[in-house]
Length: 384
Ligand code: GLA
Image 1 (cartoon, rainbow, N blue to C red):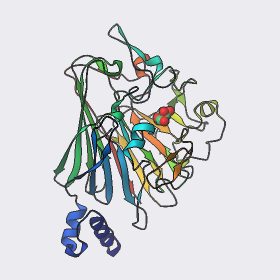
Image 2: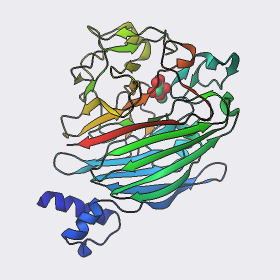
Image 3: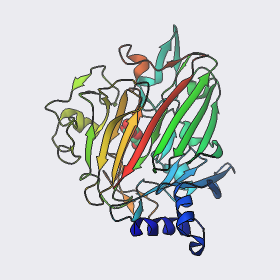
Image 4: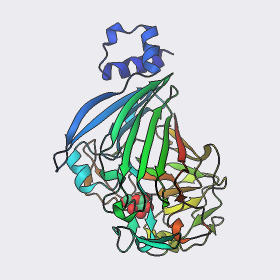
């Protein structure tokens, strides 16, 4: 109790409130959230100003940029109540603009890859922007991660959050239809971070929105995630070709390094030499969630760091999860805390539809038509 109260007061003090004014009552008020605060973060090369929003609720502290809806910092307490930033990021807008591998960003219109950037919809073929060898990755050369979003703060009951809006015009990056997108980040009074993605289109199109947060539950820049234990409720995954495009097969995980059903340290089978791992330089695959598409978010994955005791539980209504073990981090990027990120220093768990779905009719459909609302939710629950 005493420890909790101290944590809350320290949090409120860091947020600019005078600790001396806090009795137990106001400490509780701080814990149930307060209006998000905005500050300047920097200027893009084209002169556009970028802002950073700070919000806090139930022990979780979140900092979000108007550029790309980027989660620049996310702090949660460890088992001793000590906060740390558990997401990879930069403290400089120039780094985000020039060299970010999608750190913390919103991804659209299509998360992950589309083979050769081509697909056919209602008999018309479309050519998308190609930005990953011959393929389309994360929405193309200028995806949703590289646009400034309109941000609107809210408090609703005990929740605090941000509504982020971006309209992608017909033809942008080769996609048909004007897509009006609204993403809501909510921090609940329990400190959960909920993302709701909504979109509408005026022409048939494809859509697959996700979030590209890189996690390290021991704290960003603290070293490898290989000792994190991961559980994924999936009996199958989608193997890929050398360009990381799904072959179309739904392969069983049983007896392979891809079996995370019972939970295991990520490093345990990371060097098993399975041809799919060799090709991807580690894990960079879509797991086919056993629950399939669901009306409501269901728990599908748990990440646990034995050192700090921090846990992250993910629930989603989506059918897939891309687990990427930070294979392309190569020690050339310096993060928020001033330390470089090396291979496997952070990992991504992207809830999504399967990569390249428009070219695999047996994968769940990613087609969105006028009058049909797109709405999906992913919930991150933190513990220690
Ligand atoms: C995704 C992809 C990876 C890689 C990263 C960004 O998770 O699956 O192959 O492109 O994004 O570096």
